[in-house]
Image (cartoon, rainbow, N blue to C red):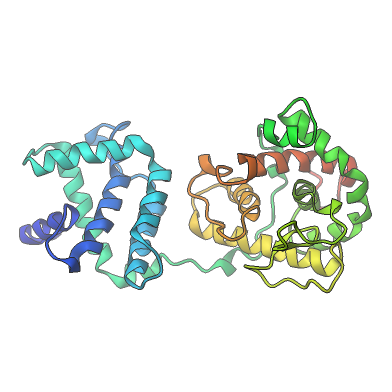
Length: 334
């Protein structure tokens, strides 16, 4: 445990220490306290637990990177607010006011304990390093067939309307998939081969291709010229061979590698999520390859086109599985 003077110093850091040298510490501890206080609205003080444990530790490393000019405090604040919501931030403000006013109760004691823990972890470089994740650990993780059974809303009204459909939801996703059955059948064997080799359900890749509308673009390039092929790989971020055919095995293999790399990043960011949640987040993140970071399960699609990418793709994948790929030996649970 820290001494009384050390606790006082940590408390000062959390609520605005003097001098520029402590600004990062102040921001850091504010972020960590924000995580704690998101639980105060729903948990009694005597049963208080630190919420978002993985994100709590990750945020320490996040602010450490700020000191190395690899990020900004605003980046971390945005992420924490996305995770914990406005209620948690309001609770933080209320209890901070109590501490500054000298109030001593269960809530302020709990916050003091967290400040102590945060101070110890923040100043221990080894603790932060231990939280760093090796994405290669997830390189052999197979996509579970239960992903196709997730109950999701399907295509949004905006996505359906863009295709001229009068209704949204799962029905629209099935209709949108059906529009691409013929095109997907042309590359079915390649999708099966590369998908099986990489532990990814071919129907999911087919549904991603369907949603990206890539099979309807003969040149292979997106309108802005940044993405190429049926997998629409963003050449600003990833190495992509534009000399091969847009629906070639080489290209599809490149796209699935990008997809698997994104899955590994998501898994490292959120190791406590279920495998289905991690894979769904990877589907969503593929739609914006320039920033494949998902803040929370509830906000998986919030930054995707029409805010429905993964919800639509996974429902389309179910239709692709049943009508194009049917029952595959390696994915026979369906």
